[in-house]
Amino acid sequence: MSVPKSETPSVIYLDNNATTQVAEEAVEAMLPYLSQYYGNPSSMHTFGGRVSRKIKEARANIAALLGAEPTEIIFTSCGSEGDNAAIQAALASQPDKRHIVTTQVEHPAVLNLCKRLEKDGYTVTYLAVNRKGQLNLNELRASLTDNTALVSVMCANNETGNIFPIERIGEIVKERGILFHVDGVQAAGKIPLNMKESTVDFLVVSGHKLHAPKGTGALYVRKGVRFRPFLVGGHQERGRRGGTENVPGIIALGKAAELALEHLEEENTRVRALRSLTYVRSLRDRLEQGLLTSIPHCQLNGHQSWRLPNTTNIGFKYVEGEAILLSLDRYGICASSGSACTSGSLEPSHVLRAMGLPYSVLHGSIRLSLSRYNTSEEIERVLEVFPKIIDRLRELSPFNSDEAEWLKEQSLVNSQ
Ligand SMILES: *Cc1c(COP(=O)(O)O)cnc(C)c1O
Image (cartoon, rainbow, N blue to C red; front, side, top):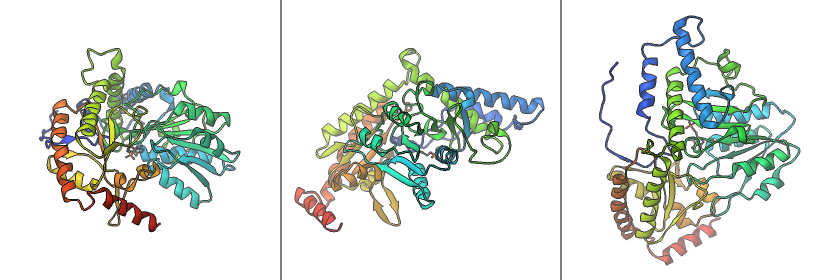
């Protein structure tokens, strides 16, 4: 079986929290199931049975990555589906409870669903974070009532990489016997997860964030937790998600999970795992320190240590994030600003806003997110061009003095 290989455009890809390169091993694993082995895993014949066995293998691999049982895994089409399915299932199982607790820094898959649920009559508490992006656990405890159906908190933030203390949050949630949903999309494959030793009821994974193809995902549902299917149909996924399985995608996701676990376990297999997470962290630290020390007027957004090993988010004062991105793009460097360009007006990231960062930092913030496919040559190249880009943009910027920034902050305050 040969597939014509076209050249990957030569880019320095530092946007791995947006999506990742599919692992070559995952592509290889899925290919036969796109062509030769097209049987339906639900069929009685041996041809379908072969496919069914492969899905079983993939389920075991995802379960191993999460420290869960294979029967606790449901394959989904994406992280957003997992979040929607988990939250709706939790609410459906307790129709008399009408209150949800979440945070202001969740992914839109959770935030926008919560907004819709508010329209449907639910009350939602959106917990605030401090300047470093951390929750106040006393506030969390105080927000819980007898009417609270669910607490939904992300494990790691996609924009800052900040990690919430899931175990401590879980203890507080379980003191009140409340269901606990965790968006684990950015955490899976980047930090160790162990559902057996946790109090998490639902955990969400997305394939394309961990080197599997887009359109794949998994939802962990703790054994014994009631689950009403989000997608109603056949008996697939033991009756918990209808629809014929995305067989090639599931097989690739299983392979990606297996690889992710190997890279997580690098402490034991240091010699084998050339591109370990320690390696990713060291590249990230080199990049971050290099930028923070060579460029004036910039700061790290988020918490220094409670953070994913692959993510850095830096605010560069007196420059627009979009201008930085466009300049980086000219050098083939892919990054992200976290801003959402809605209806022509540039809205700063809701995550950085929730952290209460000043106007100048909000508008000039850049997220750089690495993977095990990055190299130190790439990082050195970025460190070479980045300071020049900022220098040039600041020369052009009308807001290159403290006075101008002060005026801008004043006008913002006055217009509120
Ligand atoms: C990307 C992401 C999602 C959504 O995953 P999709 O597979 O793109 O739907 C949800 N939560 C977080 C934290 C994410 O980063």
